[in-house]
Amino acid sequence: MKYCINFYGNNSDIYNKVDEINIPIDKIKLDEIIEFCQQHNNQRINLCINDWNEGLTKGYIDYCLSLDLNNIFVRLPNWDEAMCMAIKEKYSNKNIYFGTMINNWDTIITYLNYGVTDLIITESLGFELDKIAKMAHDKNIQIRVFPNVAQSIYKNSLDKLKFWIRPEDIPIYEPYVDVCEFYGEENKQEIYYNIYAEDKKWSGSLGEIIIGLSDEINSMTLAPRFAEARIKCERKCMKGSPCHICEHMIELSQTLEKANLRITLDNNKEDIKNNG
Image (cartoon, rainbow, N blue to C red; front, side, top):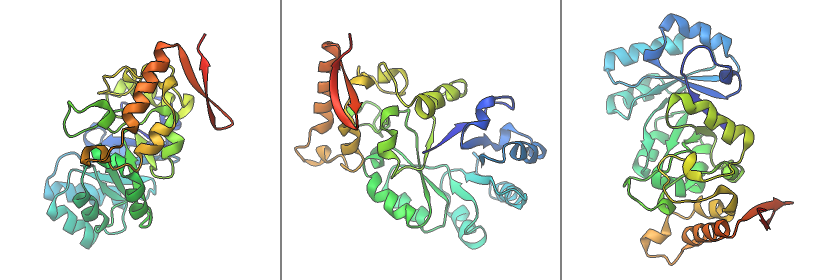
C-alpha cells in the first residue's frame, strides 16, 4: 500500500517517509516546485490545481509537464468536458488525473476512456472495489481512497453503510487499492500516517481516528471478516438482500467490548482473549 499526505509547509520529516505528497498549486511558488521535487525525488508529487480556468489551467499543465522531473503528476479540478477533450487530444498518456471524488459508475467509465492515471473512489463505490480495481488495473490506473473518513452521500447514514477502512484491514484492501490519502486537518496528516502505515492498528474507538464515525466501535473487537465482506458486497442490504454481516459484526464488536474481550490473530486465525 502507498500513502499520500497533503503538503503543509516545507519543513517536515514526514515527507521523506510517505510515497506521495499533494501540493495545491497556490501553496507553493512555481519556481520552488523544481527544488522541492528534486529534494523529494523518491516521492511522487501531485500538483493540485483546484480552480478551473481554461487558459490558466492549461498553462499550469503545460508548465508542470514540461519540467524534466518524472515524479510530477498533475491533479485537475472536477470533471470538465473541455478539459477532458484537451486531455484526450493533447495530454493523453501523461501524468494527469482529476480530483473528483468518484461515487458513481458513469464517472468511472468516463475517466477510464480519457487515459487518466488515477481514480479517487468514495462513498458507495467503496463496496465495489473488486470490480472497479479490475477495470482500472487492466489499464494501469491507480485506485485511491480516503480510509480515515466515513463516507456516504447522505451524512446521516448509519455507520455500517458508510465506506471507511480501519488500519488493521489495510492488507485486505491492498489487492484493490493502490494509494491511501488522508482526509482532514493538515496538522493531523502525520498522525494518520503513523497509525495506518507504521503502527498498522488502533487500540481504541475507531471514532477517534475516522472522521464521521459516531458508533462506539473498538478496533480491537472488530473481526477481519467485516472488511472482507464489504469490499465486494455492493451494499446489497440496501437493495432487498437479507445480508446483515456489517450489522452483526458491529453488534459482536460491541458485545466483546462490554465483556472486556479482544480479537487477536494467531497464524492468521482469529482468537478471542480477555483484555485483562
